[in-house]
Amino acid sequence: YSLNLPILIIRGEGDPYLSADICEKLHENIIGSKLVKFVYASHFMMEEIPEEITKEIIGFFGEN
Image (cartoon, rainbow, N blue to C red; front, side, top):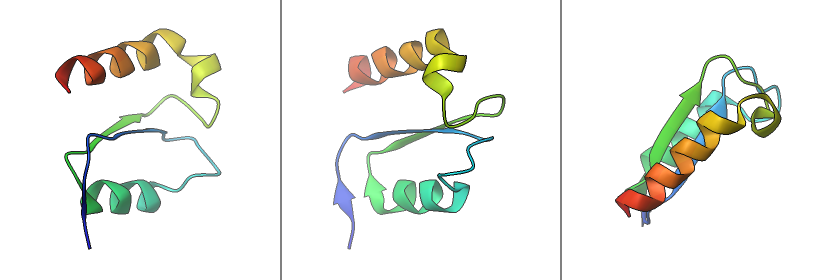
């Protein structure tokens, strides 16, 4: 089955808790989702790169 929802999936490539495979599968199965990867961030990306994350979130809500 697939969902059709505007969902933003954000992953830091250095995240040891949330695998890239899970994010890819979520993105593949949720029509209308957007997957954004930050190569230089970990699980704590809101502390590491708050400006970049905020920009993505605001941009996503502006599109939907």
